[in-house]
Image (cartoon, rainbow, N blue to C red; front, side):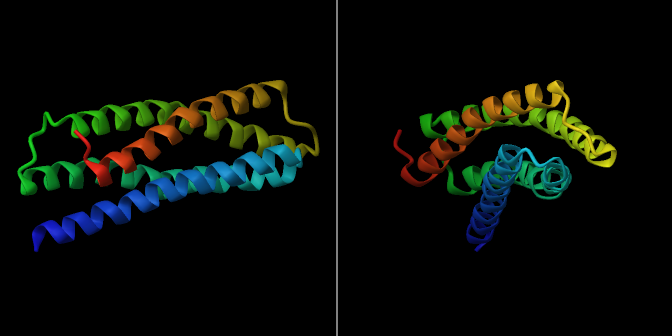
Length: 154
């Protein structure tokens, strides 16, 4: 019974992690495409909140439940699918950490521009391009991790 509960928590937290990530990226991307400073300010504020509330907590829960399931199921930690999953998770985390920093700075710049009724500075758009660039490998890493978790190919 332990395994089923831990597996459920693992799947649920992966849903929150991936869902929050893709949802936040979607809304942030299209708010930025609109170039509406007020909309960008609102969306950026909530994206930062969602990252702390959902992404940060589930990012901790994922490896905890994953390693416990590995233990309960008796899978060798050196299995290729597990090693690849861990490496891709680390890659996604390495992309996410600077994204959090960027989002906080972008949120602050957007709030200041909206309050002043002005435009977003060039630095904002530079951060946005980096944000997108870091998001692509993180997204791909998670898609591959989902496949590895289901297929366990190696």
